[in-house]
Image (cartoon, rainbow, N blue to C red; front, side, top):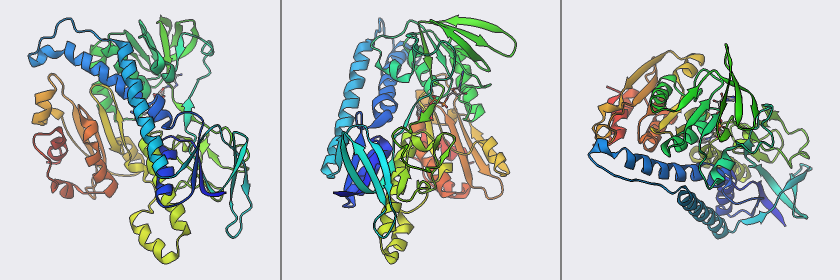
Length: 467
Ligand code: NAD
C-alpha cells in the first residue's frame, strides 16, 4: 500500500499532522518508538506542570497566613505527586491513541528509518521507510523526530550518577536533599521553582549575565529579585568548569570555587534528533536542525519537517501549529488551482514565528508574545513602551498578596501597532493568548482599546496598559 503521508515521530507535531491529514480522508501512517505524545506529554510540559501544581498547593497552604488562613502541620507526599503525574500522562496518551484510531490513522510502534526518496515524476515522488523489518511507501514524508537534552562537554558529567537531566528528575520517586541546576533557562527555572516550593535548597548556575536570557530583562529581574529574596542561590555569568561526583567546580570572571549538592540537574538546551534520516541525501541543515521554509518544507521534494527537529522555537504549540500549516500546504498542493486559491485564504498561511506566545511556569508565571524591546530595535523599529504593574488590576490585588508583577507592551511608535507583550504575575499564562491576537494580527492601540475585557480579571491589565 502506498500512503499519502508517512510521519516519523508521534509528539505534538506528528500526532497533529496525522489527525489533520487523516480527517481529510488521506491514508496516513505514523511511526513512534516510545509512547505517543512525545517529549511534551511524557517527559516535558505535562509531567512538569502536574508536579508544579502539587508543589504550588503545598506552597500556598504553607503561605496562607497572608490571606487570613492558618494551616498547621501541612505535609506533602512526593511519591503521591509522582503517581498523580503518571496517571495524568497516561490518560492523555490514551486520548491521543484513541483519536488517531478514530481517524483511521495507522500507528506503528517502532524505530523508523528512511531508506530512500523515490524518483520524482508525475505522481511518482515519495519516500521509502523501514520499521520493524517491514517496508512502507508514502507520497509525502513528515519528520517530527523532536529533540533530546543536550549534554555539554563538561569533564566529569558523563556516566555520573549524581548528574540528572530533566527526564531523570521527572522520573525520580524521591526529592533530592539539595540540588544544583546548571542552566537558568526555561527548564532550569521551572525545576528551581518545583524544588524550592517543596523545601529543597536550590542553586542555579547560569553562564549568561541573566537567567532566562531570551526574555524581557525587566520582567526577568522581578523574578530574580523574588527568588533571591526567597533564598534560591542564583549565580549568573558563572560557568561550570568540571564536575567531580556531586561537586561542581565553578568559574566566574575573577575566581574559581566549588559547590556540592546531592543532585546536579543539567538543563542547558536541547538538540534536534536526526538519527534514521541519513539516507535523505542532501537534506539541508541549519545550526544542527533541519532547515525548513514557512510551510515546513525541507529542500527535498515531498519531505516536510515540523517541531523541535526544525530548531525554530522548541515549544509544543509551535510544533502543532507547524504541522497544521504543513498539512494544509500538502493538501492544497494536491487540489485544482481554483479550489486552492479559496482554501489558501483561510488555511494556507505560513508559520509566523514573530507571534508565538510562550510561558515560563515559575511562581509568578512569565508569559510573553512577540518582540522584546531589543529584538524590535535590532529589526529597525522605533519603539514606544507602555507598562504598568499588575497591581493596577483589582483581581490581581485580591489574589496576589505582596506581589507587584508587570505588564509591558512594545509598540511600533510610528504605526502604533503592538509588536510584543511581556508579563509577569499570576495567571498571565491564561490571558497571553489575547495578546497573541493583537501581535499576530498587527492590531493598533486604538483597535485593542475597542476590545472589552471582563471585570474583575487580571486580563484587564492589557486594557489598562493602553491608557
Ligand atoms: P534554554 O535554551 O531555555 O536554556 C538553557 C540555559 O542554559 C540558557 O540560559 C544558557 O545560557 C544556559 N547555559 C548553556 N550552557 C551553560 C553552561 N555550560 N553553564 C551554565 N549555563 C549554561 O534550554 P532548556 O531550559 O534546556 O529548555 C530546552 C527547550 O525546552 C527550550 O527551547 C525551552 O523553551 C523548552 N521548554 C519550554 C517550556 C515551556 O514552554 N514552559 C518548559 C521547558 C522547556
